[in-house]
Length: 465
Image 1: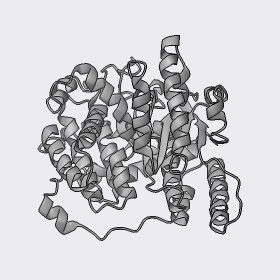
Image 2: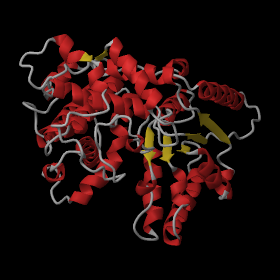
Image 3: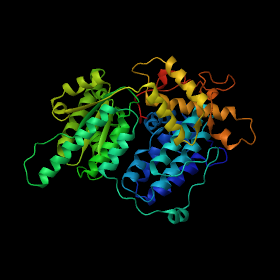
Image 4: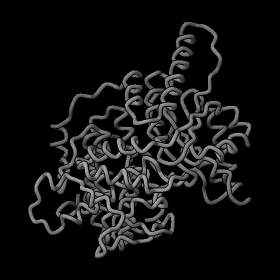
């Protein structure tokens, strides 16, 4: 996938905003989300901040990297706006997904793209298109965005909202996560009976719907949270079923007093759906000053959960030990979060299944030798909290797509098989010496290279595989 011959970031953004307006999405919200995604895809490219700022007048280099941190969660999953359009069955969902895919392609024009940027963009584009049920991009080409007339002509009848059984079937199809599946099924059974008892005029104990997800990075917590939001809506427990995913930076402001307002605004955007707070314990970690802001956010969150208890579910997620301390330290949280769901690490076979699925979704094919090489990489890679699990598989694919593009750089007219097939060479831990892929990662301070076996390249920052 390449931005060559396609739209610039400004052009892709303009096309996206046009569709956002038709879909009834706040234009500024769509703009901020799109620019965050572009920054997250291009953050390893030298010179990208300056090119990115042209679409965001007045922006600084720090704004670029702040946006990249926010946008990383969408490198392998649909954006928040697209998720809401899909959940609502909007007729604009396919057009919006295609515009996001075009924006991902345009991000390859920022600065001097590394192979990682090409891989990031390909996987991100595929994630948006898959979520909306759109056809995959043709590898190596960039489709023109649909004009309003074409988009209207291609509109399909509104798709009915998914049923509980359909959403549970999607859950069951996920790789691994057997304990998680059993617990979600149990929760659904309990909540369904509670709702039926209430409708029948029977007394029913108040059951807390808020959840704690614990597990290492990349074990599917965000994916399951998205399904839970749809399930709760299908049960009639939530009015909209959207998932709003945030971390500390999106709840805490720079001054005391502002944090309460900022947190309340975030909660308001999640009403009718699920608010997913990643690494929630970061709200109460750090020095005294940070704790003051974090405590203000937690206090506001507890109040908002009580005031909006009839149409809001909050899911907090992170590592097991600090999450237990976080919940136990605040009586308001302890009384509202009574159900904890543990996410196990993936086995090698499960990670191979995940990689195969991601590859097919991006319209690539792993040849048998490449699968064998991935197995060797898994054997060689240390496992720990920073391993990344499903995100490790996604990072492997992103890097492989970049190496694949580099391998074909001198092939004038590659065949369809050549354009699709990921070979063992593309999974090599050592990128070609003539390719510059060593820009510093602004989050870790480590090289943002294509080395898929580097566990420092995976964090609990965004959407999980």
